[in-house]
Image (cartoon, rainbow, N blue to C red):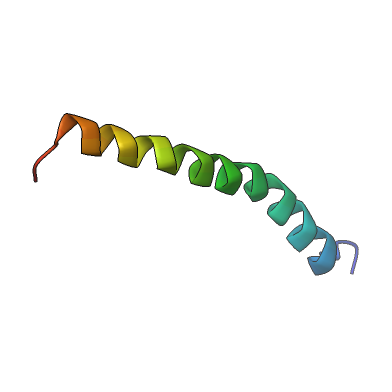
Length: 43
């Protein structure tokens, strides 16, 4: 076999790629909810 997928390395790279997005989501979530509460958006 010439091509071997290193699953540990692939998983680590995936976590490092997604981590900033998750952090940004949690930081922005507070401001998003405050905006909804202030503007009174109704479903």
